[in-house]
Image 1 (cartoon, rainbow, N blue to C red):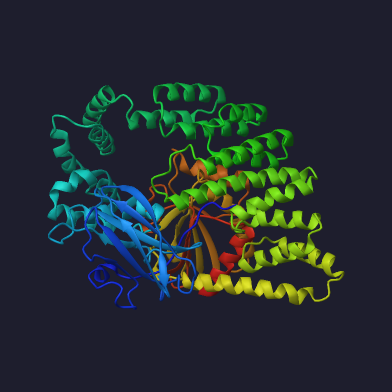
Image 2 (cartoon, rainbow, N blue to C red):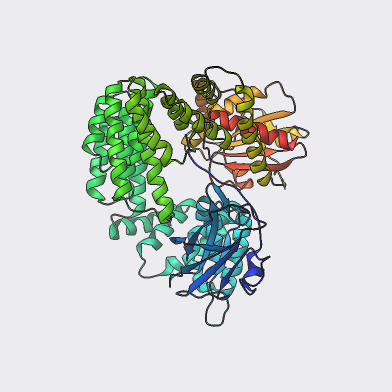
Length: 630
């Protein structure tokens, strides 16, 4: 199933902004006026030629407005004349700058992971205070997550230092992000730098909630429990609903295994912190807890009684697990129908608040996707119950909502078409799925079945399908070629689960696939069946190796945790333990799973964040990457 996405191309924005926009066709990006100010309306120009979006027919633009943090995301409506696209954006008066990305379907141009940056100016036409630091904060965290910016913390530190030297008055706005960067880049100096940075806020007579949270958190992180405790006491006394209290109680809730106690903690939390951002997640986790102990009746009752408090995704997550484990299909059907109903309601009139990091269009697509997941689950149930005619329109709607990009949905849709006697349509749809690369391993046999039923024989089938398979292969290879990079892979030495020291340098002369993962990461685990197939495919190739780097774990005994997980699932993975998260920082990873393909010369040639599609697609993609760097 789809779980995440990313990757892309380059240009230097700083020189372009000073040019006259719309005059030179070779420019990829520019804005008018050339020195935009907060509150202005700007005209954005984008030339898709010489970018990875060249030749594509529909271009979208998303603008991320920032000050000390991301605070507004806008869809920018574009028109075009030839390859030149343009659109207007109203800048918020509170903004320090804007970062833009351009999209066409699943392909994105984010300026070679730097973003297209528009720094805002003052009346003197010089960058306003905070614009560089705001970009540094984006590189450190939110831009890496939502725009796939390169999480270059050394660059972020340089930007922070330059900003604070020129505009020391803005430093306190950025301390949290600045301290995170310092902790990563200069760990030996971090305590001194953080202590110095906290001096001015700590001297204030009247501290606000955000300042108290900062002081409590960072004094604790540098080991000054006296000062941390002092500010924590004041924080809790003056702001009894502060985020740190909520976070601590949420962690307690997550760690509780007993479903009954978990539910009691939820009810108490909800009463004490009405409207908390944690509440919806906690409801989801209670439903999960019922599911995980196999108490499906209570899971249904809980979901039904609290359907407006659950995420739409949760109905799918519970029902789909029940289908996979062949547990109580009657209850699974009820849960799936609840999910479909809730999904339709959220799509039409959302009750949940739009996440700050989504544009309106992105948020709508997410809601469509979650409805599609519930329709898919309901369709599977109908299919398993031999209700093939009822299944067809349900799964057809799911395929339409996902724009035919989910291989598993496409497979079920193909089966339903064939079993309802719609052979010609099945041939058209399946051949399209194969050609676009959104198929599964079963598609070839399904297409053959439809072909045989329509034509009465298999004559000519091999030539017929070869056209689509070749087109899919060519499309994949061309897409991968456009995403090839050439960066030196940082060396590292880590212990594996047998206590052996393993260095990347040991693999010089081999192609190495690095997979950064964690046991709590859903997309990581979803990708592992495909990764297992890939490992087994290359197990006899002594020129290819796979290393699975366990990072960002949230448990105390990381080695035991990883070992139990690998042994339980019988994965043939060579696992390395990045206990201190040093290697994942070296590789500037912004989200997991992230996979790197390192060539025989020790250079990173591919980087892929997240997991989408099917296991078959993952194996094909990794195999093609390996082939391209051999």
